[in-house]
Amino acid sequence: MKSLLTGQPINRAAAAWNRFWYAEERPVAMGLFRIIFAFCLLDEIETTRSKSTFAVQGGFHLSYVDWITPVPRDVYDTLLTLQYPLVLLILIGLWMRPACLLLLLCQSYIFFADPLNFRNHPYVFLLITCALMFSHANQAFSFTSYCRRRFDHASCSDALLGDPRPVTMQRLIQVQVCIAYLFAASHKLHPHFLDGHVLVAQAARDVDYIRDFLTHFIATADLDQILLKLRDPAFLAWPSRASVAVEILVPLALWSRYTRPFAILLGIGFHASIWGMMHIQVFSLLMMGTYLLWLGPSRMTRFISIVSSRLKERFEQRPAHIQHEHPT
Image (spheres, rainbow, N blue to C red):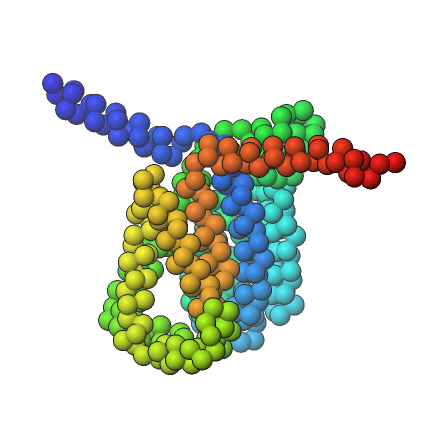
């Protein structure tokens, strides 16, 4: 009886823990996410070039770790330029792990050499890059998978989608994304944000961008009235509170297969609105790309197989069709 009350629940919990962290699946989601993440990294390089200027020698600098010091301007530009070929290697999945390691060294030095860098986006990029370095994301949709098909004579689906691998790093990225959501929500739980004043200030700063975005959906006669309302904290109070609710709900709902579709649609709408109204594009794309990590490999594999078979059928039928239209 004692073992029934103690041993079995512990064993079940341990088995669930192992399934969560060490289950093996095809790295389909990680391969697609790797591609999206690489494109986001390209923009992050230019963002760093314009916003981490205190890492350049000769500017204002606070006391910091002795060996992490500002660098001359030419060294600063070189550290950024070297990141482009490394991101390209990550994009195509070739030598991904050494590329991630060198990218981490370059980005980390610039990040920590700038003690006035209060942007939270680099933290997420650095943590995801670290997780990719130890993952099997280069085994799917990559140059490595193409070579495996060509030289190892593997089937198209096995080479393209990769063999089953542990999902440990995928889980780490999922957990980090949820932490980022919940931290952002907790950071906004104060009256100044909930009353709409922060969004009013954000709208005033990006008013030209918002105007250009809304002209695609709203008539010019109504546009001025809407822009006027964006100056009213009472009008923006409900979007402020709704954003906090979304950032709490989405990371919780993603873990249930019953609520996951709703969470993904809600998250896409949330980040699309941020993309259009707040001029935060690349980070919004990155967060939407992380939703791929919650899609089951069986569904993604089935969808990719259907698409590839349809394309193959059309490709095989095209020569006969062309020959029929243009007889020799």
